[in-house]
Length: 197
Ligand SMILES: Cc1cc2nc3c(=O)[nH]c(=O)nc-3n(C[C@H](O)[C@H](O)[C@H](O)COP(=O)(O)O)c2cc1C
Image (cartoon, rainbow, N blue to C red; front, side, top):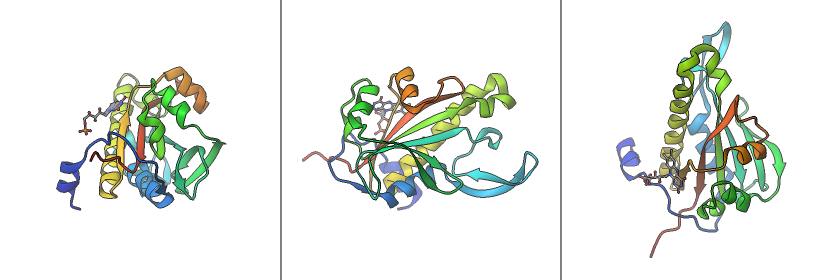
């Protein structure tokens, strides 16, 4: 699929069917969303990473926490994406799909996604350099990751939907983050789309 086709047919999935996606599908979406795609010299380092998304000052404040519900090759639970190793770190195993829907103000379709990738902004990573402009920059960075994930899922034939409505404090508690230095920005629902008849 070429880029104009992918952008034109991109839509947010209304709902998801109860079928797993593969670990490779998820890996591809994470890599194309926010993976390390290059290296440069910066900030006194000979080997400084560059990402699939453009980032103010190349400071890369966006973190991804996949909540796995139905992905072949992965146990259900909360994970963290490690871009350096292109790997998932287990944070907590368990079935969290109805909790995720509750955290998203009771939006039912959240519970039916095969994976919910929570995107957070590590605000302090950008703030030390940009101060008053940092908030807008981290949100723009997150938007770029969101669109990368939309396009990657679309090209891969998967359903995807961004969800911005959630209870901040409760979601931060679930993630074990402070909601100040690091706060959640978006939930990215991924799965096989339920198509109407
Ligand atoms: C910042 C943001 C927040 C959103 N929040 C929600 C949400 O809470 N629940 C939901 O079902 N969809 C949400 N969406 C998806 C939008 O409803 C969807 O993008 C919009 O209806 C346009 O449809 P399209 O993406 O298919 O073009 C959100 C999208 C964005 C970009």
